[in-house]
Amino acid sequence: MRRVAVTGMGVVSPLGCSVAEVYGNAATGYSGIRRLEAPFAQRLNAPLAATVDFDAAAHFEPPKLRMLDRSSQFALVAARQAFADAHCDRDAVDPSRAGTFVGTGMGGSQSNDDGYQTLYGEASDRIKPFTILMGMHNASAAWIAVEHNLRGPSLTYSTACSSSAVAIGEAWLRIASGSLDLAIAGGAEAPLSFGSLKAWEALHTLATVDRDDPARSCKPFSKDRSGMVLGEGAAMVVLEPWDSAVARGATIHGEVLGYGVTTDIGHITRPSVEGQAQAMRAALQSAALEACAIDAVNAHGTGTPANDAVETAAIKSVFGDRAYAIPVSATKAMHGHLLGATAALECVLSLLAMQHGVVLPTLHLQTPDPECDLDYVPNATRTSQTVKTMLSNSFAFGGTNAVLVVRAAS
Image 1 (cartoon, one colour):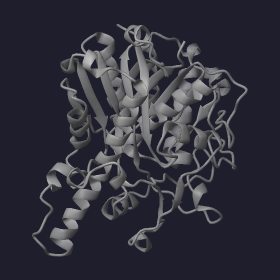
Image 2 (image 1 turned 180 degrees about the horizontal axis):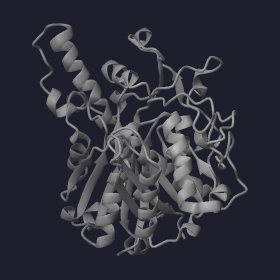
Image 3 (image 1 turned 90 degrees about the horizontal axis):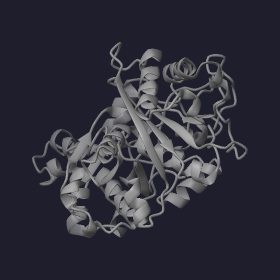
Image 4 (image 1 turned 90 degrees about the vertical axis):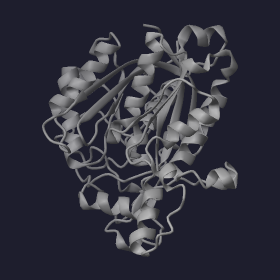
């Protein structure tokens, strides 16, 4: 198995639309969660979202823009950033050995919602001609492959909240095994349509609005947590063999060491300690590491009562008494839950934190929960702890648990 370097990163997120901006806002504890300002907001029980400040017309010509759902727009811009950051000469890579791996939970949610509104709400048959192309789950991966001449596998993974962890993990496997020489991997999501939000609301998993400050509504691991806040955006990483990256003098942001994926079969929405712990152990085994090698964990940390207590217990199951000495960050308190794109954003944030020698905080943790008693780096970035190797956890409805092992460049 070859070592796999991360040589490019790109992000479009509620924390900003560049890697530098995202890191700066995360490190200072900025929350991208806001009260949602939309025509339908008054019909929501808790009009909250983590939205992206994004002008699509600045990135795409009108003919192309008419074929792109918001999720694909995010994906393409994040991919462009990642390739620009990698400074790789794609002409030097056989395009049949370059692949595209993208995760999404809901695909072109807004495009599909618009089509249903036209058909059922307005009783009109004038559906947009590109509705299928905009709404299909593999649209983002397809557009990236077309734009960058990537002729190897173009694969889309839809495993709900773990989608982009699976995408990055599967891309890592192909680079590590030698079947590909270049890959772009990540996730994209734009789930803030009215239909999507009402459907999520019906599940009773969304947070209530914090009365003092809506930006504080997502409270992972806090006793007063009430649920998750949906967000939108995309994050992409460029992966290539370590030796190739070193040979061409690339700036290496970090290394993907391993990937574990397991399936929780107890219930389609209810997590289990055993399933989450098994995924972490599988990731460690894939990376050929003992648990003692992990310096920090980027938690799934959704802010729901069920997940946070289960994840805490799963971390204890894997690390034993040492779990209390491992910093655990839950960055969804800042950027919300981007569903299929979340894991990719959290992977990027983990790499950035190690690059800058910090541990990112879990915001809005004011009320300790006896069931959640680990070191969650409450409310402020920590600069006094050296972190070289991390787990990044992603657990999903449907039971697909995926964990990435990432390491600082060395």
